[in-house]
View 1 (cartoon, rainbow, N blue to C red):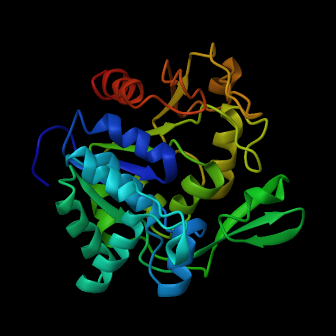
View 2 (tube, one colour):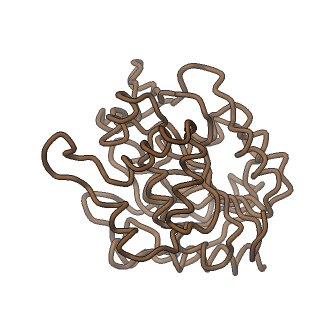
Length: 311
């Protein structure tokens, strides 16, 4: 991949990933984005069920985040219909679906959609297989990424169904060629782990010579991580995919802004470093003061590039 700046791979899904991309694109055009395909809610879920395509919603958010197109074009891709048979669908999701139909391939559809939006970087699925996220909650199996948080009960484990979904070769190659791999921010059980659980993903990350960074969330999520601190996030990842995956963990140092909606702040405790000697914790003010549960794109990218990449 040619362009300016370091070769960076971002892994995740949802709002957290798009916030990261908005910041990173000012530092490099050599961006590869690896996106979860476990989404089954809303417009994405309907299109996935009806047309048997990979869910387009998280990919749409990434395209918009990396777009260098006119604001009206980005607004168009994010436009959501509010009535009739298209109620709830976003134009961007329908565009990606139509492009996949025209090109005959979801990956080709992403590339061509990226050209339309003058995207800086490459966006690829973590796996090309149709997978369902399953959680073990109170001894029962709950299927579907969108259903899991609704249980409002502690999650024991998540896994992909069917077994054996293989990492997308393009995603694995991007990781192996990267200089910096950033995982998160994003929903721990429904965005981060669905990527890491794909067979071959963790192996590619460990084999890569890149610096590996986990961006910890700012706030707990109802139905997923209520009451979690930084160590809890790391413990859950260790329990699912093993240890020694990250070189750095970026944690928020600004706790003067309290998240709304009953969310609690994710706190880094001094003994977290003792429990995790294999990683270096990097504290930084990365909070969005207007939406304290979200990262500020510019602050986050600046912290990654100055405190980790250029350190």
